[in-house]
Amino acid sequence: MSSAEEILDVVDEQDRVIGRAPRGEVYARGLIHRCVFIRVRDAGGRVFVHRRTPTKLVFPSMYDMFVGGVVGAGESYDEAALREAEEELGVRGLPRPEPVLRFLYDSGGVAGKWWSAVYEVRCELPVDPQVEEVAWHAFLTEDELAARLGTWEWVPDGLAAYERLRAHAAGRG
Image (cartoon, rainbow, N blue to C red; front, top):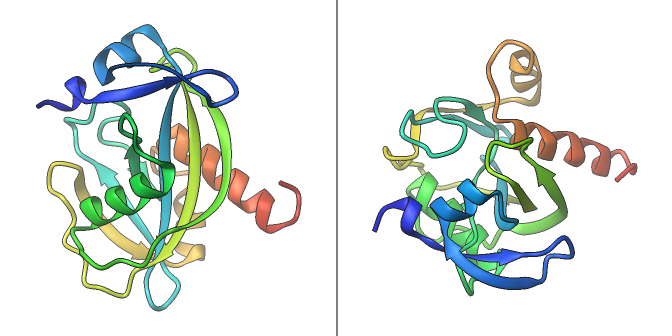
């Protein structure tokens, strides 16, 4: 099955399931769905950063400071966070990602809106990222990441999650 055929829960503005549809239809019609974002840190506290492959349906070839993706039909946010993190990092036995916050993201017409559940996890395992998802990767310090914010083309939903995490850590969110 292609990623466009994957079945997703369609939700409303309060994150209640109101139906199901294939991912391609959800994107084309701008239906609200669910996604997970997992900030991954290594043993030294550095953040996993990657460039998405050019074949991604949304935001191809852009940089991201989160791993993650859509929540499948009938799947919980917690289940999706662990599944997506292990798949994209190419690991098994990852600790369960810890939920931090949720927000409704509006893509401005790119693919509708999605509820975004943001998680954090420490990965001390050697990573072998999925070649279908990840074109390049590295673990960067906070300073290295901050230095690239204005120079690399970042996925906008990841930037929104990053800003909300910063506000949350500062007690403003």
